Image 1 (spheres, rainbow, N blue to C red):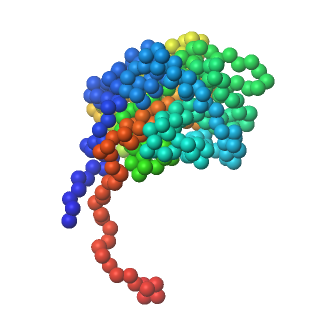
Image 2 (image 1 turned 60 degrees about the vertical axis):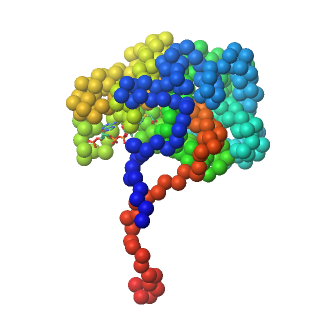
Image 3 (image 1 turned 120 degrees about the vertical axis):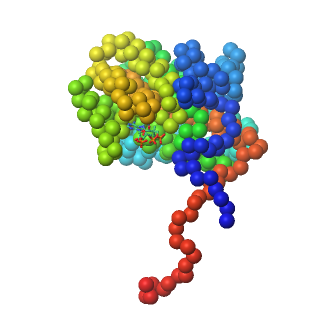
Length: 392
Ligand code: CMC
């Protein structure tokens, strides 16, 4: 019989070759196409990072302008999709809505579902990057019972997203440049992270030659879980539940207790055994944004900082190399911007779409890629004969 390598959780199995993102977990280093994440977060912006991830190089000024123009032309959703949103319950989690709407894109954009046509692949890529902000913003508007705000193509990518989330038809809404910058940085920090669970899901779905919209919907579904993208919502809810610095020891004790399923959300990572470089940038950004907004005494930020300080001195966390991850500080910024916690994971999905579609394109273009088909170690019953129900 066949002998297979058994590797639950894929801790030692490379599923593909990829030239997109590099992580050195011991050093706490993250590179997109060779460029360090902190440099990109500081000097670049999300659409340029999308270009870099998708095409492999930083664009020239002309290439960037062309790319931004193409994305901007595709920000609108097919008007029929308005009805699709309206079919959901208002109290649905926005991730459920985003997952459904992204999957439904293949029902609306038939001219970009042929994966063998490079032009259609390109259009699908642009459409996904362009329409995700509209989809995510509309999932929010729908949840709070406000009218949908249509994209404004005179605004940059992140300003347009904030505008679609926070503008209302009866009032003037000026997008605050501090918030735009912070939003854009959050998008950049979440854009890709090599073969994490959702990206591997997108690749596995794509390996069956499913259309790109179906594959990205699969990625959204996988991202939702609290061990993955759902951790940002869970983390802020945890920080709020802790509520004050004096209650931290109780939660640290719970996180260490093997009989308690509670984990410190926003802590630990499969690959990083050192600081998550994204968390470092996110922490600085949280300080900056809350300072600029004049809410630096935010109690949640104080709890987060103190919790981090205590955990990093605690033997349990030190010996297991558990450090804050990207989700630890992002929620504090999103909360300060005015987003409810249910929107945190959809915002992650919006940003990660850049990575998902880049990885999907890389896979489709790779002549050696085959359908993903893991094997198993069978532990069930041996061959046995069927017994009629009256004889059982
Ligand atoms: N709090 C307390 N203990 C923890 C934590 C935590 N957050 N994370 C890991 N541990 C312990 C765990 O109990 C285990 O202990 P032992 O070896 O004694 O059994 C050890 O550390 C290793 O944990 P693991 O679950 O085997 O590690 P993993 O690589 O399978 O899981 C993880 C990684 C991120 C799922 C996990 O650290 C976790 O659940 N963290 C909290 C959720 C979270 O913040 N997720 C976001 C990850 S980063 C962004 C993203 O992926 O979207």
